[in-house]
Amino acid sequence: MNIIIDAFGGDNAPLEIIKGAMLAVKEYAVNVILVGDKNKINKCAGENNIALENCEIVDAKDIITMHDDARCVLKEKNESSMAVGFRLLNEGKGDAFVSAGNTGAVTVGATFITKRIKGVKRPAIASVMPSAKKPILLMDCGANSECRPNFLYQFGMMGSLYMKHILKYDNPSVALANNGEEETKGTPLIKEAYALMKNAPYNFIGNIEGRQIPFGDADVVVADGFTGNLILKTYEGVAKVLMNGIKDAFMKNIVSKISYLGVKSGIDEMKKQFDYKEYGGAVLLGVKKPVIKAHGSADAKTFKNAVKQAIWFLENNLTDEIENAFSNPVFE
Image 1 (cartoon, rainbow, N blue to C red):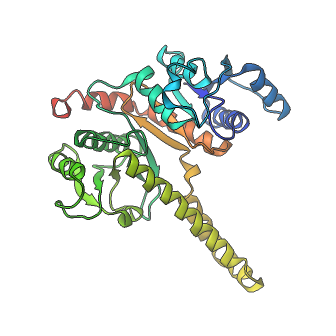
Image 2: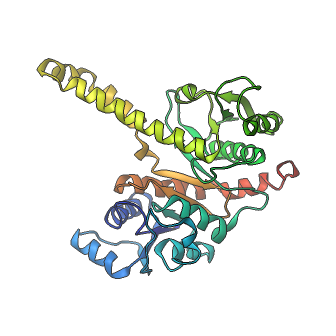
Image 3: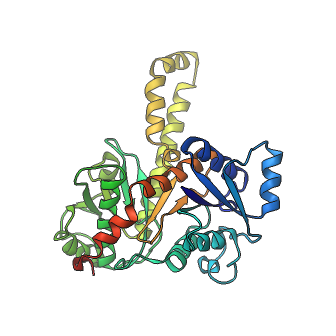
């Protein structure tokens, strides 16, 4: 298995990306292709005593920053580490592509270089998130700020397939993010999407309000990219505030510190449950080959787990499953 990695995507590139890639090599027995400035990659690895094992380096001098326009991956910066990585994927030089870089550029590159699966209207970013019961999937998390009803209808299918084949959920439930559970509530987009989804060939259970998402009342939560991204970022922020609050409460005095020892294992378990680093990033569903968008602030552990997402994708032939589903005229 050859995983192509954008070595200069993300806030902590290239050091944390290189470290994460090498952790993945050791833990998952994969080969990696690091794309980026070869001299800088070798220098960084040398200065930090990182052995580049089972690793090929493909030189690419340019870098797409978080502030660049998304379409620069196609034109102005088509020799960047991200653009070259997408071309290597398209040429079959690797099996999957992982980048912690500019989300918009990753979406554009995946859509126009890797290209959509036939029948898919729009690829969508799907993020695995924790809940009180079990992991859930939220999509779209930012690829499509404006959507049509049939986009949301298709997101439900792709999300259902992900949960069925990757996380092994039997008949995963799909819900539509809305400001109320009633079918009559919501914007025209949501009402029209609901009308399509209630007749879909997957387990659609209706609308879900934001407060119910963390309880895991649906296995897949569907939203347009604007709404989904707000849900995702709010979710991460609230989890961080709560964990910091719990830590501060136990650190107030000697009595509270002693009390902490009695509940430490439970708190550690909860912290792991709600830690976004456990999944590493999001998958772009609907394109012809696996593309993983790692968190922009990814450290080595987070990036290693993003590579794990790519491996899951490949081991379970998810692209083929989506292609087969969308060959059905019901999704045209």
